[in-house]
Each structure stands twice: as C-alpha cells, then as structure tokens.
Length: 133
Image (cartoon, rainbow, N blue to C red):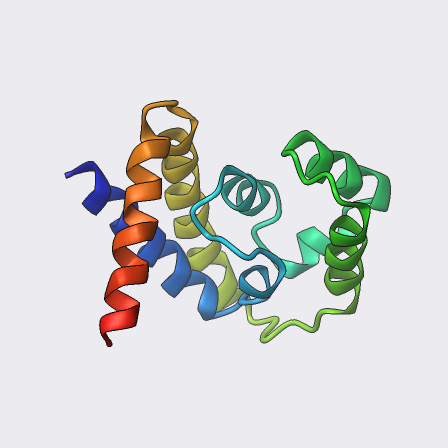
C-alpha cells in the first residue's frame, strides 16, 4: 500500500509539472529523493527557481548531500538558462498549488527512515519492469 502511495504521488507530481515546469526532471536524476521533493516545495515554478540566489541554491544542494561541486554548478547553470513553457497564470497557479500539496506529502513520506528500503525495492521493481518492456 505504501509503495502504491509513493508511486501515485510521484505520478501526480510528474504529470502536473510536465504542464508548465518540466525542467526539474532534467536537473535531477531521480524523482524519488528528498532533494527533488524539497526543491519543488521551495521552487515550484521556473520563476521562483531563477529568483533564488546562487549561494542559496548551493547551500540547498549541499544541505541535501549533493557533494560534487560540478553537479551543483551544472544544476545552477541549467536553472539560469532554462526557458519557461508558459507564463499563463491560468495554467501555472492551480497546477503549482496541486504540485506543492503533493510534493509536500511525498516529502513527508520520504523523511521516514523506514521508507528507504521500500523506495529501493520500488526502484528495483521499476527497473525489472522496464527491462521486460
């Protein structure tokens, strides 16, 4: 049941973000990480991500155990170079609201230490399913 909840929340976040802010899927290798969820909680639109100071973004990534400077720098460069899919508030506002809600719930799930074995198992199941396809 918990695995299904995590998968359902991940899919909802993914589908909502693809409408207006797909760049985080390029910037972050894995969607099932706390750094991904926390980034979305703090920067739910490209405009919010671009407004963040470089020092703040660097500190955020270091706090989330992103230790390689070249990865941090690449993400910051990508954030600065990104182009918005739309600036239409009718698309962004309601979708951002739902994404914040779901990423917050997912972030709560991810902070529980007992979920990591479940997430690892989920990754394994997804990899096996992908190889079958």
